[in-house]
Amino acid sequence: MKIYIDGENFRKGLMNALIASKIVDRNYQLKKYQIRNLLEDVLEKKNLEIVYYASRVKLPQGYTPNKRILEIADQIKSESRVWLANVVSQKITLVKAGNLKIKQSKPCRNCHKTQEILQEKGVDVRLGADLLEDIYEKNAKTIVLFSSDTDLCPILHKAANRKVKTVYICFANSLNRAVAAAASETITIPAEKIKRYFASEEVAKKPKSPQVARKSRAGTAGPHNHGNSSKANRQVAKKKEAKS
Image (tube, rainbow, N blue to C red):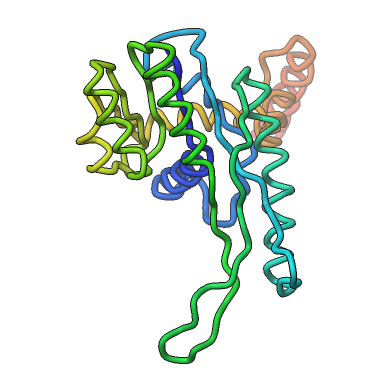
């Protein structure tokens, strides 16, 4: 079974789900997540063939963007390197197919000013082409799509015409009804399951609580504490006898 993941769509949906569950805030930098474990749990299958489609940050030619946009682009590049290294480490095939372009918007109707925006282009085209190749040339029986991009709906309809089963996976809070209607089956991932494969990454990094450590050192169960405890009890008993 082959799973196609629209990388930007997946990452944004994951962040929105984590924020909605109050697990992280909007300033959190998502660097790691157990994507393979999550999908193998959801689909109840092991050794899945997973393909992750990502884009590159591309600066415009002919002019230099403003400082704020350049800073954002540099930050995206830095975060993307760490995130994609995590993706590849899980034996997931990485396909860099599109570009995250910096471009000028259309003039505002009121002030007539333009602003620079980031826009992803090309990922859906490559993903769609690979889907069609598997449907028509490789005679796939089932394809699994992790993307809520409605541009892919016509391909899902073509798959249905050829009796190919299509499974649409999404996070529960980001269901696209048009994509769900075009797919043979829809699987939504609940918040608890999303949290499960995020928490295990974070818990491993947390140091042991200092309070717990102090408690274990000061406990009376260890052989070295019995003598001190008994001595203290005898001293208290002697003081009480002296007072009486």
